[in-house]
Image (cartoon, rainbow, N blue to C red; front, side):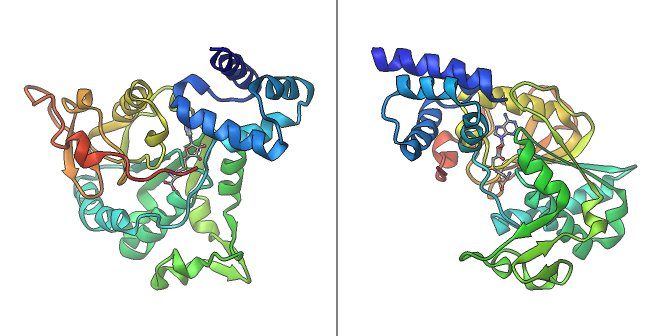
Length: 291
Ligand SMILES: C[S@@+](CC[C@H](N)C(=O)[O-])C[C@H]1O[C@@H](n2cnc3c(N)ncnc32)[C@H](O)[C@@H]1O
C-alpha cells in the first residue's frame, strides 16, 4: 500500500535526523506521535511531511520531542514508592557491603530519581551517603533539566499534590519554582543511555524502569529487560511499575518480589526454575497509555 511505503520512507528519515531507533517502538505508537506533529503543521500526507523534514532542519528537535513522551512527576504511583521504602530498601540495607547503586532508566527530567532520594533522606538518612545514583534517558534536553534540578509548577499543577507534606520541607520552593537541594542534586549522575542500543551498566542494586516498556513491541521489551537484568547484582531489584510485564524468558534469572509494584528480584542462584512468569498477560496487561 502506498501509505505504508511512504511511512517506511518517513521512518528512515526519522532515523537519519533523530537519535532514535523508530523500528524499536510499536508502529502504532510512532504513527500516532508523528501524526500529532503533522496535525500541528497542517500537513496531511506522509509524503508532504517527508518533504518538509528534508527542507527544514529545525524540525528534527521538535519531532524528537514528540516521539519521546517525557511525562513524569514526583512520586508518580505513590504506592510503588511505599513498597520500595517498606520492603525493598530494608533488604538492600541488610545485605549492603559497599556503595549502593541505584539506576533510574528512562528517567526523563529526573523527578523519579529525586523522589527516591527524598524518600531515602527522610526515611533512612544514614543510608544516603552510601547511595550512588544514576539517571539515564535518550532525551538529552530532559537530562539537562534533571542536572539543574529546577522544576516549574503552576498552570494547574501544584507541587503539594505530588510530594508528601513531610518531604516538601526538603525542597526549596519559590513561587512556582521548585529547587532540589544541592546535597541531593550532586548525588545523581545524569547521562545519555539508549536501552535499545547501549550495554548494561553493571553492579546495580536497584533499577527503576517505569512507563517506558509500554511503547515497545515484545522483541524490544526483551532486549531492554536483558540489559536491565544484566545490570543487576545477584539479589538486586527491578521495579517495572504498574503497567509493565516481565518477559517470560527472563524468569530463569528473575523472580517476582512484589506483584502490586511489579517488582522483580534477580535470583541469587539460577537453575531449575519454571520458565513462566507467575503473572499472566491478563494480570499485567497495559492499562495505562499516554499520548
Ligand atoms: C513516560 S517517560 C517515564 C519517566 C519516568 N520513568 C516515570 O515513570 O515517571 C519515558 C521516558 O523514556 C525515555 N525513553 C524512550 N525510549 C528510551 C530508550 N530507548 N532508552 C532510554 N530511555 C528511553 C523517554 O525519553 C522518556 O523520557
